Length: 334
Ligand code: SAM
Image (cartoon, rainbow, N blue to C red; front, side, top):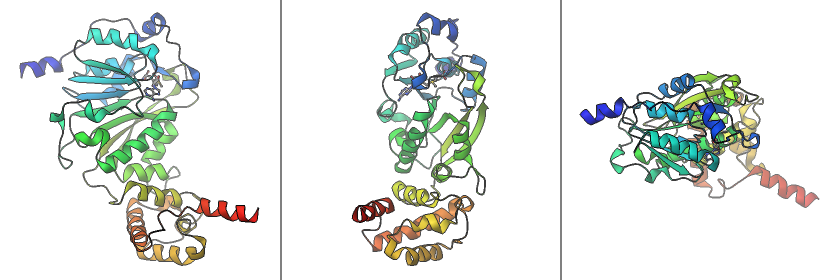
């Protein structure tokens, strides 16, 4: 008890400011790498508070850079913070933080897209999927070009309960371009409703928790950012393989202004398109004249369940790709 209270009340000793660290280690942002830093520790504290109670938590921070969010996480009384940073210029500054928080900060010079977090924390942290989430959190402000592919990869990991979700329903709090955050959290019928909305919301409870104006970053990016929090659901809203759901959702949204039967029709070879699309929509009980943005997660569940049955009946169907059919046709013509 005494030791857990000691962990909970940890504060970093006085340190140079992030601005001074940037000067000291010559950490100019590299524009090509979309590096924009948060220097205001009141703001990073506010962001980190949104992750919930981090006392004694095990936290995985992706892309710590000069360490603003890192300091706020350490001050939240975590048991251990593991950071993965790709740019070696940031390692000495992070090392200074590690020296100020003995035994708490582990630094990995590596790439979040390949780093295996599932082996990094003690096995004893693992919880059953149905239980409350483990005391393991992912936090990160990454370049937008990394955060979107990363969330797709992690959503697939949620569906397979592997990677960071080996510990159970690990919570994630990540920063995205504001428009991407709006897509992730968009409700049925809204303008921003898209493939990302369905893919995130069928697996997770997704909350847009904070908008960060561009001017909060140094250098100031062209766009605003937003922080999104994800808690994996105990029961996914669609119980089909991730790749199958992805295919149905991707097809449905490819003609987003047209009726949904247009995009969904592309799941089937041209010769059977009309008949199979009619069958899919009828069995799934979905109105063919709905726009993709009007479809609920529950509509997608029915569509995926029926499409799965159709794939089981026709073993070639899942591999069908209408772009490939178009390419072959134009080759023949050409
Ligand atoms: N988190 C810091 C902050 O809020 O001030 C830095 C944010 S900056 C937008 C993104 C950081 O992610 C940079 O430090 C960059 O080097 C790092 N980064 C970019 N791609 C990465 C990757 N694939 N793996 C690990 N770190 C990465």
